Length: 156
Image 1 (cartoon, rainbow, N blue to C red):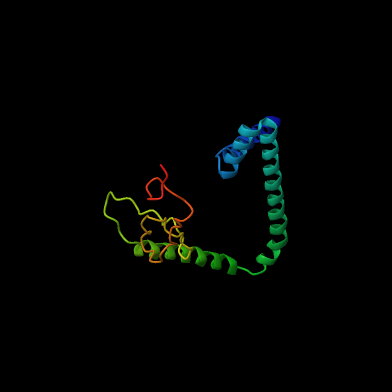
Image 2: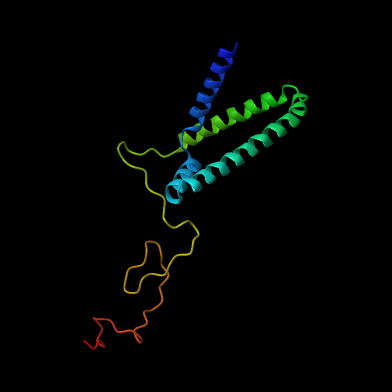
């Protein structure tokens, strides 16, 4: 009997490690904190994340336990509604996939524009060319206060 419990405990521990081992964004931040700040800061960051995860788990457990009898009293309606939502999301994905423009084979997708739509544009550099699509003139260069190496006022 005791051997079975020890086996189940070890198996549960191994399964927990298997779930917890893949590094996500938070795991990478913890590793970075430990590398830059030392073992104490890494341990503190990992302890903080574990504490918050435990509190989230406890909140979900208590909320689920409180809401389970209410949802169970609704009968099969939540089951069918959630199934319809999943089927609707799948149909939406299929329609979106079919509407996507086809690219020729071997071509990379175009990167997004570095300037978000509606963002104010920077004025063009004096003497340079304006960015594509920018028709507003930039401020005229102020040549009265600064002398460059190529201007007629240069003292060199």
